[in-house]
Structures are given as structure tokens and as C-alpha cells.
Image (cartoon, rainbow, N blue to C red; front, top):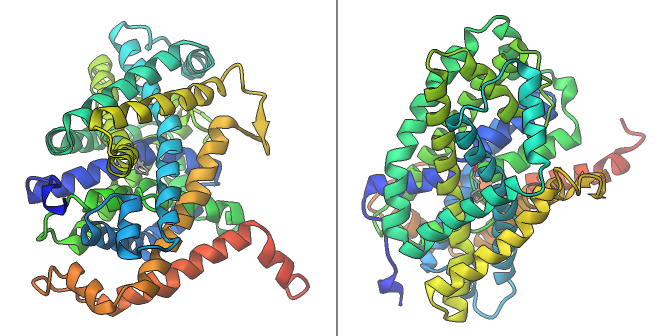
Length: 456
Ligand code: PHE
């Protein structure tokens, strides 16, 4: 069985596919939206600290679990700790993948609408207010966004059914470098707009008084979400790695590239936000109302806009593929169904949930759970709770159940590649990451405040 699993075709293929999974709407859409609703640069600072000190060790740990077990998210824990409840980490991950995919497909659908509006010429009217109005009219419509959600899930479904090696790898190879290039062009345009400095200050000059427990939790959630951690996506991908994939190097590369893309997205968005007088805390629509303004300032705006939204849709696609694959691989291997059947089950379920998410921008706007719309609540539950929890438990699992020799052998490809900071990594994985995530949770729940009341 293990020998029959497909593996990625080349070294570059491994990196690109994993980068494709990580880089997506999380960096380009969610990062600016989170930064804007969490007060700016202080968020960036915490996010970067979490990425390096928690994200990276968790990523290496997930790579270990995936390649060592050569199995899907649930199967891997079952294989490494048979008969225990550790496989619940896997179930948490699969549920998270399923939930994330449902609202992620809605936002991915928005990118397709923007491709469409660019093509038929209806996007470029005049002035910032129009873009906000235009977005609101579209996103609150009961049919249009759902149509695009369906199209997007259909595309994802198609790639998943045609197989891991051909679909994912080929797609990532072309699209990622192109996206990168166009982001750079957009950044240059954005920072040369009038009053662009205000945006750069907002993005890079931390005001530590803005650091509240909810900002810290949001930064943690963003780090996990954007690196695709804590839900077994990277476990599933690593199960397709070959035995000589250098996993530590891959983890570093993916983390750095992903963080760099997020910072580029920030540089692309915030100077423009300030230059056009848009509210940085506009929320989920921030990127969609800001960018058309920037495109309008470029020669051949139509062309840039078209290429950008197509690439963004594709970056989203390489992420939705990975989310879908987590769920499909599980259904397929655990229930012994065909790939086609497993994929259908996932696609239909995700679409039904996606409909509710999409409607929460319109007819279901008033229907809130703890003050959050359905869309926001699913995002909150997954990014801020399920993913950090999954990452924390994965670390505790490997830290307590896996022999360090076995861990080291797997991470160094049986001693053929060096792992210079192995004991530092083990320390972070075993103690720092679980403790830090635990503290952030307690802090958000107000437990720490309660305990230290009076001593502050
Ligand atoms: N990391 C992806 C992004 O930033 C989203 C994602 C989350 C993909 C979790 C897979 C798993 O767009």
C-alpha cells in the first residue's frame, strides 16, 4: 500500500506544490484584512514572531508525521499510535479542512466575479465609493456569488479527480512565480501613490498599545491559517514527499516565501488604502475594494486587473486543492471508496455549507453567533481555535510519543542531510509551541487576567 502512493515528481515540484498550498487567499486577502481589523503594525510583528517560533517547528513536525507514516491525516496517527485517541487530531484537521474550504470557496468565487467584471468592462467606473458599493451589491446578492462558489468548487473537484501528481504539481509550477511578479508591480504602483507613507507607517511602525489578547489570538490564527498548519494538510502533502526530500529546507523555504508574499500584499494594499481614504478596518472586502483603485492608476488597467485576478484565483485554487485533498484522501482511504466518489461527497458537502457562508453577506447578515456572521464564525472557529489546537496537539504527540532517534532519522533522511539546530527544534516543538499556544488561548478566555488580577 505505502509503495503505491504517488509522490511528487521533482524537488522543485515539492516546493512549489507546498508553497501553492500555503500561499493563497490567506496571504493576499486574509492577511491585509486581519491586519486592518487588528490595528496595524503590532499585528504584523506578532504574526512574524509566531510564524518563525511556532509555525516553523509545527510545520517540520507535520512533515515528520506525514512522511513517516505515509498516510492521510487520521491514518497517520492511527499508524504511529495504534489504538489510541491521538487520531482525534486527525479528525479535528479533516473537519477544519472541510469548514475552511466552505468559506474559502466563497471568497475564491469573488475573484472569479472580478475576472468576469474586468472582462465585460463593468468593474472600472469611477471613484472609491463605487467599488465599495459594487462589492456590496455583488456579495449580498443571493445568487451570483453562489454561482461562482459552485464554479470554483467544480474546478477544484476536477483537479482532485484527475490526480495528485499531474494536477497539483503542474498547476503550481507556472502560477506561483507569475503571481509573485505581478505583486511586485502592484507594490511599486501603490507606494508611489500620493500619501502612500501613511500606509507604510500603518503597516510597519508598531504601536504596542494596540496589542490586546484578541490581536494576539488573531495573529496566531493568521500564522496557522496562512501556513496551512494544524489541520493535516501538510501531513497529507508530506505523505507524498519522496524519501530524499529535504524537509527542514522545504519548511524554511515555504515559510519564508509565504511570509514574503504576505508582506508584499501589505505593501500593495495599505499605501493604497490610505491614499484613497478607505477604512483599513473595512473587513473581508478590504482587498476587493482597494485593488480596483490601484489598477485604475496603471496604464492598461484592464490587462493588469485581468491577469491579477486570474492569478489570485489560481493561487486560491492551489490552496483549495490541498484542502479538498485532505478530506478526499481521508474518505478514500478510510472508507475504501473510489477517488471520484470520495471527491463528490466532499464537494457537495462543502458547497452546501458554502451557500450559508455566502448568504451571510446578504440575507443572513443579521443572523449572528456571538456577534459574528456565519462566515466570520466559521473563520473564527477554524483559524483561531481548531488550527492552533491541532498544531499544539501534534507537537505534544510527537514530543511525547516519538523516540528522538526516529524523529532525527526521518528529518535528516537517515543521516544524509544535516539538521544543525535539532535540539533547539525539539525544545520549541516539545515545550515552547504547546505552552505558547496554551497561553494565548487562556489569555483570550480572560483566564490570565483573572489569575493576575490585583497584581497588575
Ligand atoms: N494557507 C492557505 C492560504 O493562505 C489556506 C489554507 C489553510 C490551505 C489551511 C490549506 C490548509 O490561502
